[in-house]
Length: 206
Image (tube, rainbow, N blue to C red; front, side, top):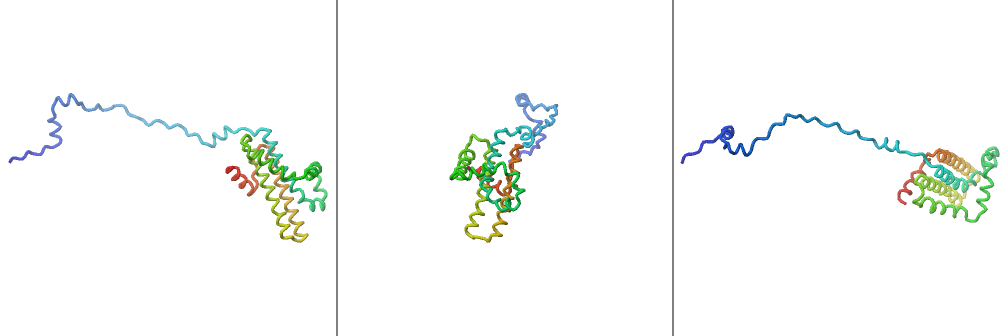
């Protein structure tokens, strides 16, 4: 039996039926060169946020500043030793001393104020996040200032240690109040050490 000779691909291409070539013409070669299109500039999120940033409303600044009066009024008792020993330091606080005295004369004033801030501001979705954060940070600061009082009642330290602890707490409280008050007036967000992180986590989970 005779075997058919193997045909090379070049021979097969020349032997294709002409009718097949007319029905299936080869695709024309494109003479146009395609150049890559320039990509659109990517806008940075930082530039968008910076351009869309609006100033803090005056009402939000006032409410934020007023929130930090709560821990100041409750912790003002820590300054009794320092202010009695150095009366000159009590000069900046003379305008608010009658207000602090009236505040402490109201029964359960601290308890009522706490829930008023927490339910009326922190958990209120109609209030801006800026005000809610500052109110919650003020409440956390007040809770932190209550802990030394509880430790004192349990351990009953000596008078010298108590005076030193009270003086340090009062200086810390006044520094936090002055810093937070200044930031609130300027419309900036105050970040108290450790307290801001706890307030931010609580606000995100609420």
